[in-house]
Length: 125
Image 1 (tube, rainbow, N blue to C red):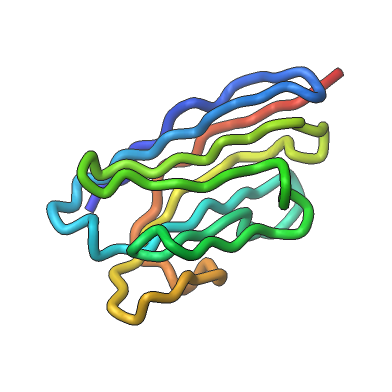
Image 2: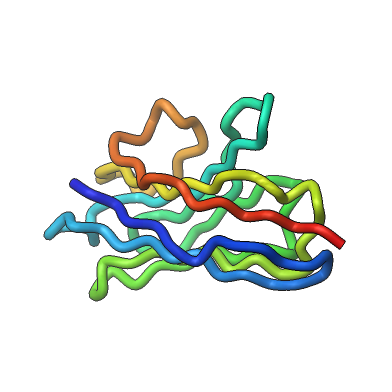
C-alpha cells in the first residue's frame, strides 16, 4: 500500500492549508485513517484520526476547533483542513492508515501499518 501526501507549504499565522493523501489500496474503505506530525526534536504525535465509516473523529487538544479531518473512501483520499494556523503547528505531517474492522479510530503511531512520505508545513508571522 502506498500513500501519497500533498498540500503542505508555508502559511502565515492565522492562515489555512489543506493536506491531502491518496491511497493505492483497493479496499481503502476498510481502513481507519490518522494524521500525525513531527516537529524538530520532538516525537511524532497524533493530530487527528477518523474511523472507517467517517462517523467518529478524534482531535488532539492543541488542534481541536482549528483542524478538520475527513475522508472520501470512493476516491481513496483523506484530508486534513488546517485553519487558524499557529507557528507551533510547524512540522512534517504524515498520513497513515490501518485496516480496521472494529469501527474505532487509532491514536498511536505503532497502530498504523501504512505511512505517507510526509509533507512539510511551516507557519510564520
